[in-house]
Image (tube, rainbow, N blue to C red; front, top):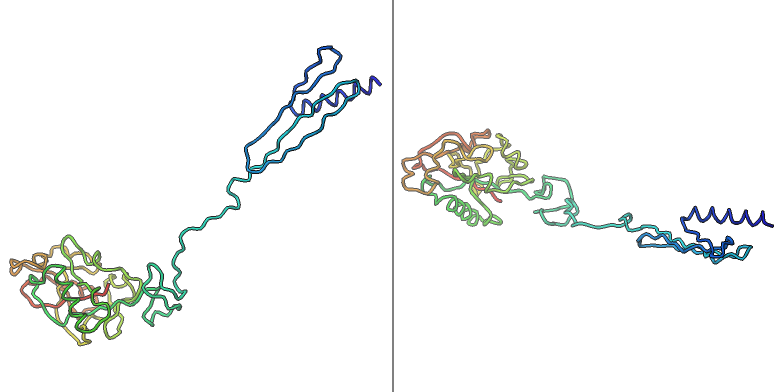
Length: 278
């Protein structure tokens, strides 16, 4: 019987060592004692607890069972989901933010390319002296007035292809993914990159009334849309003293880079403007 009791005590000691609890001998010194409660816990969102009832051990001793709290962390974000702002989808048939059209197909010939409408371009039917345009604002107003008289859609959006030393045509006009077309439907460029590449698909010789015009054009602008270096810009296109100055001009009959810059001409000359829908 004593041998059996010794085996039981050894097993209990092994359990105590495994769970890290403390055994205090009884004050009588007979080997009887108690095990202090210990607990292990981890802060979690999901916890599982196990406990064991008090056990009687032969020989009169008793051991309070230790309690261990098992924790499982389920708050690490796994399985969680979040949604950001919904991005526009080109081709779904709905005009969304950043789009000017969406016809649900990939055919650029119908006036909608990559969810951007064709931008109308024309050469002005009227001519102006370079120093008497009224600056960039006055030139834009001339384009808008001509577009309105001709019955073009959105006439208020037209701007002149014109630069000053501190403001480029590239900064004034929208860089469209869509095509740039004349009033009669001829395409001059497939997109902004094509327009500023130095080569046009067709010349800009059609005015707002679909009439052909062959003349010089005030631009002060290079093929990439930047101000023409060395140009005097006719006193920023708004200075009577500009009568004695020069300004950059292009040729409407040209399809190479000279469509926008060919030479410096006297600001008293009567030239036209290129007008772009933005």
